[in-house]
Length: 204
Image (tube, rainbow, N blue to C red; front, side):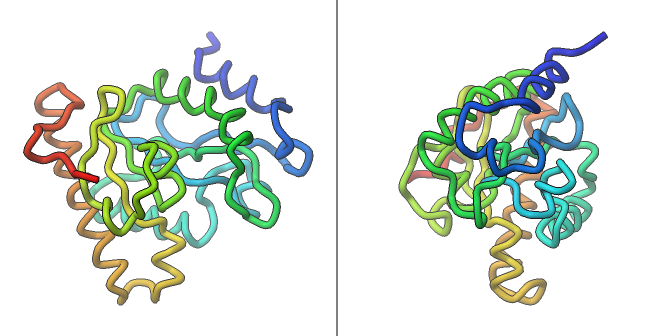
């Protein structure tokens, strides 16, 4: 039987709602578990993702896999997607109308997967999901309520690679954030809730 999530992916695969459809090789819908407790949302597909149809498969994806392994998870156990499902030309930021065209796919995917915790990767995804102009450096590692779930922003893996890789301060901060992600996920699973105690909430 075709699930609602599979049907949504099928609909997305032929989408022509915005200009990004004209330049894509293929739609990059998502990867990982269809009922994950933990979902990662990045900005948009890059070259390798556009070629393979899978999010986070380049160097940044390899780093994400490593970070997941350090907290005892694999990408098969989580859900990974982006704010837009087609590659923007030259890897530029998605434009507002492109985001709005793609937003229903993201909204429905979140509802169907029903994660307890969502991690936004980088400035762009964080600003889109939390509807804020505050930079990632000020909100990373904090817990934010969002539609009955918990959002935890952190740096994009590509930013870690640009900033010096494994030995960098950015990498240390991301590892701290992933420890927070694991603790929050474990607590949410234990309590059966996705909400955050008020004293733990990050403040803009």
